[in-house]
Picture 1 (spheres, rainbow, N blue to C red):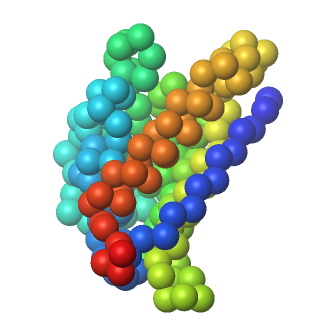
Picture 2: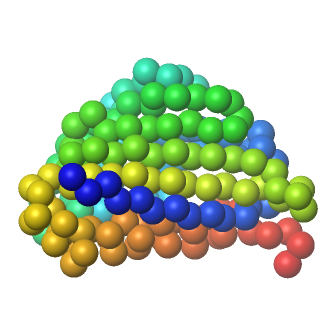
Length: 156
């Protein structure tokens, strides 16, 4: 079993509190997800995230074929981090850490650490190399660009 990992870091012109309010609200996930995923939240969402919270989605990641994705918020340490893990969906395992901290310059540093395993053994490894990894990188690249638009740097 091969565990893949993707780490991204982004500096945003936000306070820890502002970042937490935005990123801990699951309703904002659709705002920062590329349209080609046809992402739609299908569960009722509370105003405040909590450990044990289940969130369900419909996505169409490949060939416009709909898939159900169920995640659980497994850890919450407001305003510093939360973790979501797939309970049902396209991956054999998905673990996503969202980490927020102020760096030495007083800026907000947001880090995402995604660890995942694909099903189907050798075929899954080939799929990761040819397609899946690139798609995950595209999602985070899109997210970075859209966050720069939502939260423009006030110093620039």
